[in-house]
Length: 309
Image 1: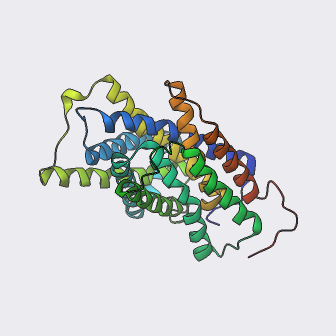
Image 2 (image 1 turned 180 degrees about the vertical axis):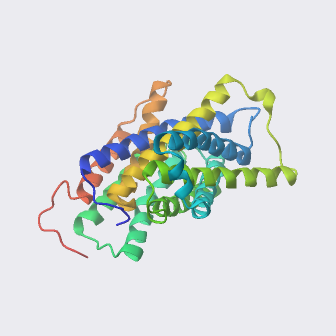
Image 3 (image 1 turned 60 degrees about the horizontal axis):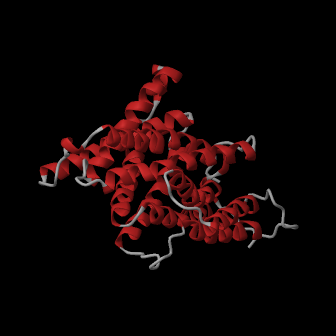
């Protein structure tokens, strides 16, 4: 597994991962506010950079206040920046992908993350497949697709969905390396370090786009609503969510943690429901399948004798 230490409590680790996914799901509608605004206050490259900078500005002082100057001095900033650059690339692909599709489609494409995480653990960690893991993965993927809902007119997998898939792959790699490539750091420290690296990379991407003549910010379209959405998208959906996520990955491993991401479309639906959306029993059924898949894959629902494949 990618965990740095054995999980002290599978229940607490799963609850932490659930909290991370809830916060991330809440940030997806906030991103929609910024992406779908007309006129658009921030083009995708600048939106990605602003989100990263806001998250870094929140995490870096928090890390310093809690762990002190020595912790920042001992950190491998070069390696952290490299991992953070991958995180920035994944976030940028997500912004472009969500621009070309929707928040729900971005969530359903993320159902591939447990499979990617499991492949990484098989290749790099020698993870052995069991019947429970395979069944749990299948339930999670099927449940994630059902939880996405909105099948009217087809799923519409196009370039936006492909960009979202690229985002999932890069984010999975960045999450793994945040846990494994930065030893000696707490989850807060490793997350702060990589998010700072992501902010540097994201700002560089934005600067290159401006130098190349791409559109700049539209400050006249940037009001309180847009700033609040950006704060939720950056501080909530990246800074806080990522700290909780890295804690969960450190305890459960990337594959078991990634099972939770397939509940995100259901969480998005619930948040949209609070904003006037409608309830879907199909999405609720999908969420239930994902939840059962998480429990089966982790052996919390025993299937009898565990067999390896």
